[in-house]
Length: 291
Image (cartoon, rainbow, N blue to C red; front, side):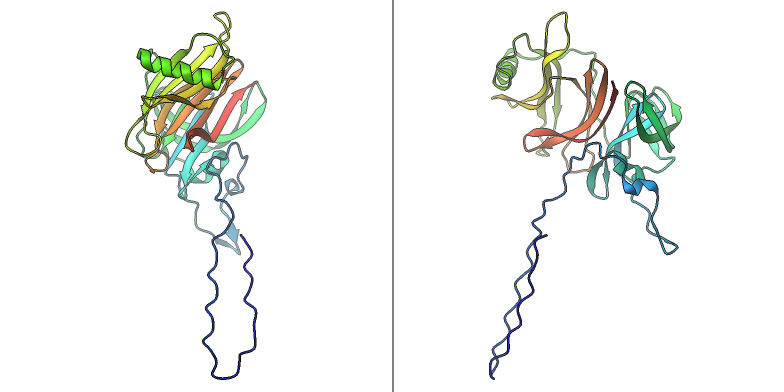
């Protein structure tokens, strides 16, 4: 915050004294707002348990209204992002808002409850991660889960998208603009409609990639593009991963949908929660397992 200088004291002039000048208003802090996209920030101090001052327990941490979690090895739920205390936070910062025994919707089609905290390991990398045990799972777990009352939109990944020729041409033009050196057929993996900016009109999104060759499926270009009927543009690009949009939901109730992505590479994958910010998809929270 910018420092506020105290007004200087001056001797009053001889009577009659003029009215005292009103002090200048305090200026808003020049400090920028905290980022809404923390990524892998590590263990939150609040995750250690409730604070106690002079023997009096402080109020309990608020419960996360909605949280997205990654299912790890079918037994641990790793928080990715959540709405907590009116803000979007990531990873371990969500743990205090996830009470034991809360209901969990497993996006593999099953249901469960949150268990106690436990440490799990990603075998390929040896990295340890703090998550929550899955209790009483009924049905398949799948690869991600949500808590709280929220509508989740998912897509059948087995159905290939049908894309009109004019849309395909605009996507190809966006690819040439973003990656002029990339050659090869543009492969459209998903075609989706999601409202990312809360204007009531769904954005048309396309998950695309260009493979290195028919023998080598590793991407030379991989991204998520938006087409508005006039032109297409790249919202995010990562040529080391193949993207899949697993689902969409409104984490904090602001009308803007967040996307849950899988970013796969040859030795593992990562699950991320992203949303639209200044024309690009920005990560709120993510975690992955791989070498």
